[in-house]
Image 1 (spheres, rainbow, N blue to C red):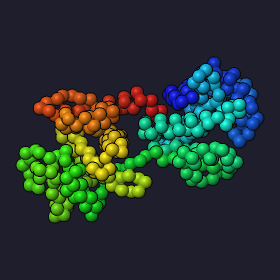
Image 2: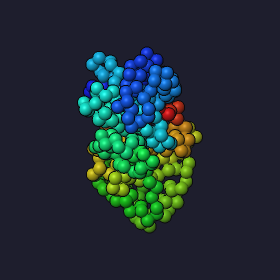
Image 3: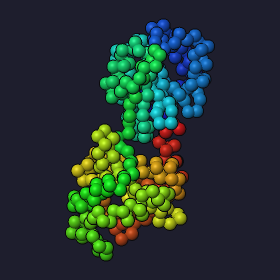
Image 4: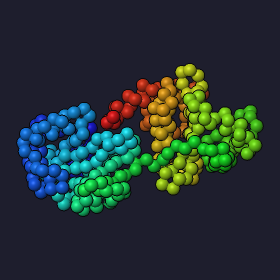
Length: 334
């Protein structure tokens, strides 16, 4: 892992960093709220155990301008859904904003690679660390012995399978001309389609039949609302259905009034995660008009590959192998 901020580089430590790290970890003031100061041999063991393992649990914090080691970052899986974040910085570099800068950098990195949650633990007396955590959106969740525990939930969206009585929202987006404008102008021979707007009738009398076909039919079919977690508002829908033995087809719709916020990309990532990690499918296919450049960019950013262009339609595919390879190549620490 390598992360660069304005003034810092966070990257792997090596044995060559032992002496510089020893000078930091042997400082009584630096270690005041952590553990007794290290001697040189303990520093050697610390680097071997936590920095040279695979994946590492700690990383070096270096000044970008001269490559000087000024501390170490704690960043590793805390549980199945969270990573632990912490830092130790040499005393002479305190009060320069470095801890805030690296915290912001780790938050950005974690969002990019879909780490759901960050956990920060500190001594109850570490007022500065608590202030940094709260300034960056961490919430104090509990105290354990002498530790204060803070958490930052990084998932903006969630997928939620609706109940039958909740299908009014699907009825709403299918009847919204602005949301359904991508669907207009086609010669589709089915009842309820409006060529001039792209809207599709979805009367309550059809809900039960549709629900019985699409819901609770995994792994053949999957449907869910896209929910914004901060206010529990539905902002769109996703679906998967098995088209053949080789792949599934997918769909994703963001309600028009919620577009332009990056939700489509995040929702697509959630759908891919569910498809490959929960349903264990082989591949996902999607297709749409060539002029939908924003949709194309989102799919390519998430790892889809163009497999053909035909009659103005782009066909894209992602295999399970592509999905897991993409995660590794992007530096995820699983």
